[in-house]
Length: 389
Image (cartoon, rainbow, N blue to C red; front, top):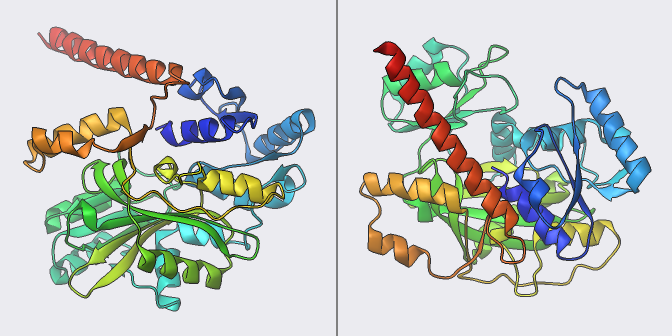
């Protein structure tokens, strides 16, 4: 899922800002963007200290740059090593431990309760017996989530699973728990369609004042109902924006925020589901008429430039092409989408995750990579059948 990072490269690159990226792969789709000036690679097995030194060496060679984590692991890395990086890079000065607290499903839940922010009821089992005890009292379906995505889990363990029965809940717990800790939250399921899920992307300055905020809804997700946005639409929601601004001001949050809510028709409340204390992969859905997005707001603010007030474009749609094709097929199979409905959903799509007329090569590389992966999978299956025969 490189589309979020690709959006960063393009958004900053179109302003003429040199952009470098850091990854652990020999090559990735970002290398092929016309706006990329190069990349750093962390060697396999590199320690945290070695990674810090590689970053500091880059700063000595290229100058002080804005450092942007794109996932939870890198956000935690920057937060944990801020004292060793703050003289070499520009990034928001976050209160000690806040990023890690917001990224933890358990600590985020506790912060919501402490600050009277509506959130679904949750339980935190420490054993299979606790899961079975919860199942006897719960109303199904029940949502299981990994509390800390950075902790190890079984191969293929999802970040989120919706269990329809006691057996499914126990299976999800066994798959998602970590050897180091139980690491599973059991959360109340709030009924509703994808349109009941609201997203907010915002930027908070050094005083925790919200300089820019956009709200929108998920139309399709991958995996369906639980995963990342593959098709989204901008829609104003002052209640979500105001609630988030108050909550983050109380916490002293600084920087880019990606947060999710769900409207609960049973009691008429927007309930906070997840907080990403970093830029989200969906951030290019939220672009103002003047081109402003949360990345540009942060860049301008951290480099001492004014951030102009910008209004969101209601109705603007954004799509991640390969992921949305797969999720659309699954919605078709589940009877939740028709061909006519699919065509209507593509109206007003103004930007895509991979395709860009002025930067087409990443799109070509991504689709070629997907095609090669499919050919390899088919060959492996065919060879497996031949061996069994």
